[in-house]
Image (cartoon, rainbow, N blue to C red; front, side, top):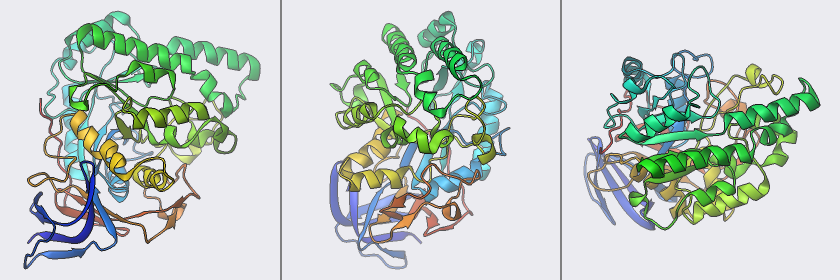
Length: 443
C-alpha cells in the first residue's frame, strides 16, 4: 500500500502549482492535478506546501569517537525533523576517515542507525594520497581537504601535497579554506593584546577575511590549473565571491561554492550577545559581508545553501575563547530559518528549494534525488504556515541540547518528512523502523 498526498501546493523546478503526489514503495509514482486511488494512506495537504527533501552537503555528526557530542542516529533524527532527507558527513571524526576501512566502518554505522539518507566524505592528509586514489566516487561524494586548521593531521598545508591531490584526484574536492599562517599570526597579536581573555568579538579578526580569501584563491587557482572538480565550502566574505562565476549553468561548472545558514543570518554585532554560541570557522563576519553573501546567492555566484552542522556540548562551548570549540548544531533549524528569511522577503520559495534541494543534487550528480519527479525517490517534506513555534530547549532534538536560535520564533512548521517513501517524521513523532539509504552518485 502506498501513500497519496492530495490538494497540496507543490514547489519544484522553479514553479509552484496545486496537485497530488502518489508514492508507491520508495518512489514517486505519479504527480498530477488530480489522482484517484484506493487502498492508499491518505494525507490531506490542504493549506500546506510540498517540496523535495533538503540535501545538506556539509554536516559533522561526530561518530565515531566523539559521540558525547552527537551520533549519526541522534543528528539524523534531528535532520529529518528539520526536513533534511539526505546528508554528506565530514571526515574529522575520531579516528579520522583517512582509509578505506574507516570509510566502510562509517557506512555500516549509517546503514544501521541513520534515519536520513547518508554519505561520507573521504579525508585528505599530508600523507594519504595512496588511500585517496582508491576512493569510489560512485558512493562517496568527494574528498574533503582542510586548507585551514583542523584536528589531528587533517590540515593539508604542504603545497606539494596539494598539487599532487589536485592533479590526481578524479572526483570532487571539497575544501575548507582558511590560511593557517595568517590565523596563527592573528592569534599571536590577540594574545599580546588580551592575554588569555580574548573576547569572542575578536573571532572574525583572528580568522580574518584575508585568511579566507588567500586560501580560497589558492584552491581555485589549483583547480583551474588541473581542471579539478572543486567545491569550496562555507564562503563567508564578499571578496571571495569574485572567485566564482555566475555565467555558467550549474551542471557546466567545474568550480562551485556554498554558503551556510549562519553566515546568512548572523553578523559580527551578534558576538556581543551570543559569543561562543556563534563561534564558527570560518567566522561570521560583517553585515556588509552578510548582504554580499545574500546577493551572491541570488545571482548564482554561490550555488548551494548548507548547514555545516557541527555540535559541541554546552560545557565545551562555555569555555574561554581559545578553548571554546568552533561549530554549532543546525540541521533541525536550517530549513525553518530559511523559510523565515523567505517570509521576510529575502528569497523566493522557488529559489530556496533550488539552492537547498535541486542544486546539491546537480552539483554532486546524485542519482534520482533532489527533485519531485516521477521515478525519483520519494524524499519529501510538507510544511505549513498555520502552526507557529519557538525554538526552546524542550523542542530541540540535538544530542548536545542547545541551538544558536533558541528564543527565535519560527513562522513555518514542518509536519511530514518522507525518506525513500517512508514517513519518518510527523508532527514531533518519529518512525524509527526503517533507516535511510547510502547515497549514490553518477560518476
